[in-house]
Length: 136
Image 1 (cartoon, rainbow, N blue to C red):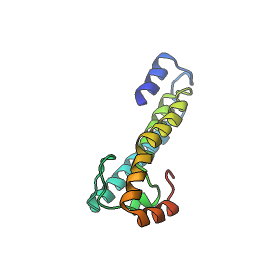
Image 2: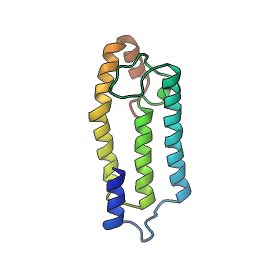
Image 3: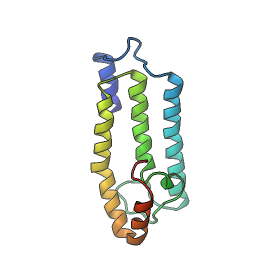
């Protein structure tokens, strides 16, 4: 998706003339937030000795740290990275990519992961699902 955003900015610019319609410092803040979310999520998964691979079976249901804010903090971080790219390049049309990207993540990864977690940890999963939002 980032390549699509860059391509649209390069060959079909539809934003401001300087291709930066969002202050650079704020773009870095978005990207920094994404990096912090990934680091926090990976730390929790490592601490609980469970897999980070989305298609593997988890050994534990991690519900603390970044996972207490969102059931999918790494995917939220992925979306933030894309949002930062869209903002950085001022690609107005590419903002649609963010919605498409969220849809793909949900259909391709999240729904299957949630089914696995529900079958592995039925009671814990139900409690966690009711307490913590899928995104934010």
